[in-house]
Image 1 (spheres, rainbow, N blue to C red):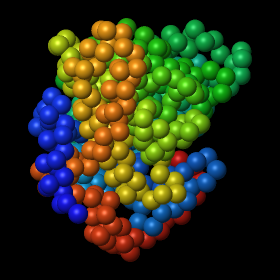
Image 2 (cartoon, helix red, strand yellow; image 1 turned 180 degrees about the horizontal axis):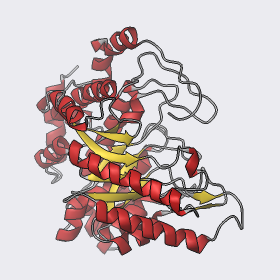
Image 3 (cartoon, rainbow, N blue to C red; image 1 turned 180 degrees about the vertical axis):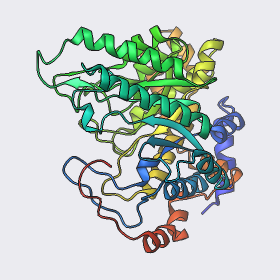
Length: 414
């Protein structure tokens, strides 16, 4: 049985001889960054039930501790997205929270406002027919922009539950105008050198109409706002059969792809571990991203290299930290395979109209066993060769379970 160093040498010989820059691929993998969500470390569930997990974080500092462990195991998860007010510190001191994260070797990432849980948002937030409700939502956005300055965040990540349940409930065009007007005010609030990412969702919680239902609406709104507004793609927020990689390619080409919320779904917005249901789709998405990173067009390269990669998952029955590690690793694997696509051969096959050859070139990259390459990357990042096994061996989960106990979270998402 050969050792891992020998496997890596054989890997380099095999794929390097085909014209692939293995050292270049390795360096890009070492630069990869995946942001994890604070809410993924807490108890969460469905509208029917939340099953509490022993040791699940109940404070933001505990969430940061857990995120630091994920980064320690993977080496590519250096930031944590915050959800406000879920992550509001008891003393209100966001600068102290930022300092706490820094001491753990991580940083605070995107700020996610919450304009969907309060009773006042029953008919929506930015699209609500009542001006006082829209004003409250805008005040919350202003608070979040101030929080961005205190945490050092440069991303305001926006998702709206706004919509209607019944035909005739409200004017669809007027709701569009309210959304546009409110977003324009938020745009002016953004701190310097920051941007806003607008997420979309084609249904739920509203069941007749959703005010930002798809990437096209998000794109149109962001186009009107300006260069600091971009679309955020959540992999679970699409109807069955939607070609997400085509959406990714279009938005990059328009300089309007700002970020991802990585997850997976079988039926709808299931928030399953990314790559757990359709790893080939994840690979094809990363193929478009890797291709854009290598583009001769400077604008496309700049857009591709400025994309915020974030996890957004609700771990309901599988634990908290181990599945987060798995999510990060699945992104790493997909990116590694995408970087190994022989783009010289692919371009030649496309020019000659050889459909099958072009298709097979992608499939061959998808089928590559990248474990020797990832072993070397992790070694150079001072991370465990097998992060999941190392996490189990660390006894971290047993320790936090004993320390934090088990909190009955009741029902609901948070």
